[in-house]
Image (tube, rainbow, N blue to C red; front, side, top):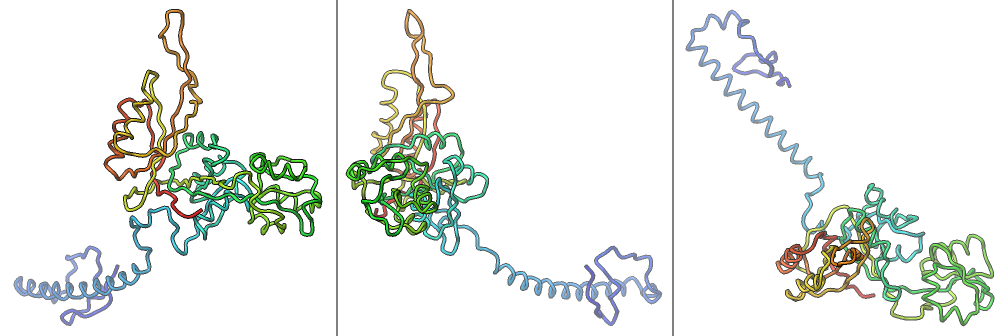
Length: 377
C-alpha cells in the first residue's frame, strides 16, 4: 500500500513506499550531510511519518466502526431458547400434508414459521440433518391412543436434540364438499387412528370407512376429486386449505384428546432454571432383581417427578442370554428405557441423579433438556 503523495520537511516523499528502500541510491545532497545532520533529518522524517500514519489509521478505524455497526449482533443465551425470534421465519419439517395436525402443532410453537411437509417421519428427521429445515415437529404420544413407537425408535437412530414440546388439543372435524349434507355421505376417509378415535360418531352415520395415510390427505382427495358422496375427518385448517365445509366438530369419542409433539433441532439449547424444564433420557440396564427399581429410585431420592416411562426392545440385540440355569441358557428380552422427568440439567439434583444412574446403567444418553409447554390447550 503506497502512501499518498505529500511533503515532509520540504521533501517529496511520493516515491517512498512500504517496500524495502535501497539506501545505496541516496541523492548527492544527502551524501553531503554530516552523520549528525543525517540523524536529525531522519528523526524529523520519522516523526512526521508517524503523525501521518496515526491520522490515517484513526480515519480508517472510524470507517470500520461504521461498517461493524451493520453486522449481526452476537448471539446471547436468550437467542438459544427454542422460542421464535421476531421477524425470522423458521423452517419446520413435519410428516403429512398442509392442514395436518402436525402442521397445527408447528404453527402453535412458531406462528410465523415456514412449514416443510414430508412423506414419512424419518424424512422429517433427515430434512433437519440435511439443513433443509431448521427444526422438526413430530408427535410422540396421544392421550387416547398412547405412544408413537416409531418416533421413539427414530430418536435413538438420529442425533437430533429435543429443544421443546407442544401439547395440541385435537379437534376432529367431519368435512365435505360445499352443499353436501351429512345424510348424503356414504363413506368417510381418514387416517385409521383418526377413524378409531371418532368411532361412536361415525357408527351413528352408518357410513363406510376408508383408510388413507394422512387426515389432511383425505381432505385433499375429497376436494380434488369433488366427491359428493364422501366426507373426510380432518382439522378445521384443512377445510380452509382445500375449500371444504365443516359438517361437525369435536366428533372424537373423548373430548380430552391431546397429542404431545416434540420439537427437534441439530443443536441442543442451554438449560436454564428460570422456568419449568423437562429432561428426556434413554438408558439400558443389566438383567437382575431390582435393577429397574434402583434406576427409578435415583429420581425419587431427589424429589424429581417422572412424567413418562416407555420401554422399547433393542433392535440390534433383542435377546440377552444369561447362564443362570443348570439345564440351559435363559433368554431375556433386552429393553431400552425412555424417561421424561421434571427438572433442568442446570439443577444440581438432576446432574446428581444422572451421575447416580450411570453407576448401574450400561448405556445412557440425554435426548434433550427443554422448557415444558405450559400454554393453554
